[in-house]
Length: 362
Image (cartoon, rainbow, N blue to C red):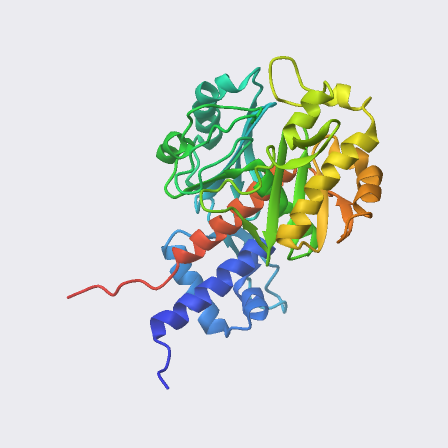
């Protein structure tokens, strides 16, 4: 059996130290030894290496010591310039950018209100640049209220998508501001990831009912995006409308519930609509989801969907394969999901920079 190399063992020790500091924020070497289960000499060597690499720093704080209280201990934490992640949301109410550090703290935030999707291309660069100023930005996650091509990260124009930003490439716009990848996804997919953490369920469907219509299918704990990333774009799924079988989005047109000049749903007007008619249309969508994806539960989110939970539940109870229907529980779900992913990626990036180093030649 081959023994692990010394370089690999050092890398594992460094990861244990870094992840302990991510959670506790500041620890002495003695406390690190207790938390990691590593020996004090091993921890001391790891801290020395990480300080040399600029990933860990002495905070300047000391433990009480002397006069019978033992040696004075130094507290260590992540270095201030060890890196942050940029989180961006592109939504009908505006463009928001945050910088998140490896502790999970939001250390800067910028928001710009927009009056229409055509403004996004002009607003996005300035919002991002203002937010990342003076920060070592390692990577970025982007939530967009538009379909997203999973291969390129570009936003995709589909018929009847209400919030059409147009030909926007967030990767090209944001890439020059940071040192690593830009991960772009649809806002409903990010919301489903946030709900996955809250639910603790590996297989569920997340149905978004707001100004737009969307869905995400989570299977074995992963959001299923499909070949091009457009899985869950349910606007044209055939369901029960007021006049018979109708594309889901057309139900709201037939009921006079669209905003003038767009396919976006008029949420204020919808609150006066017959909940039974809406629930019947939504029930058809849920039946299709259950038939194809076999979720354990269906989660209803969006600005108006949860308000119809009772009517939807009653309608779905009559289907051949009823499943529990729950209201979404996460506040600001798209931002929450994108932020959580950015934090995970940032911590992985931090650990990778402390990984095995190539030995110097000569």
